[in-house]
Amino acid sequence: MFAKIIVWIAGLGLIGFGGMIAIAPVDSFAAMGLPMPDEAAYRIELRAFYGGLELGLGALLVYCALNAVRGGLWLVIATFGAVGVVRGVAMALEGYAAPLFWFALATELGLAALAAIALNRGSAKS
Image 1 (spheres, one colour):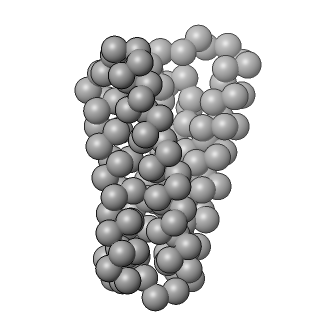
Image 2 (tube, rainbow, N blue to C red; image 1 turned 180 degrees about the vertical axis):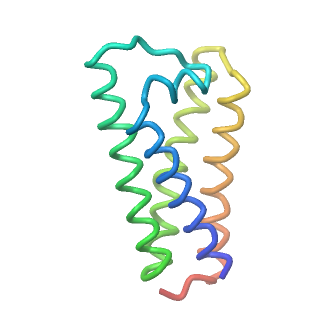
């Protein structure tokens, strides 16, 4: 059950965040303190890559929560782990760390770590 919960949280989080960006990319980033130029090219790229990619990964994780929990855990580790590691390195390189970035870093690395714990405990049967 622990493993399923981790995969559900990751999947629904991605769907929520991806949906928000797909619908209102400029407003979504501004609400996070990341203002973007309100130009068509930016809106298209934000909707497609941030919105579309996160919606797709979120949908896949929901599928995994229902049918292939072990694969979902690996996907959580790969995606959230990679984003968290790169975010942490980028924060160090830039010497900049807004509260939003610390929250995102903790969420990303935390979910990846919980997924790794679930895999290690063998709590994912499928």
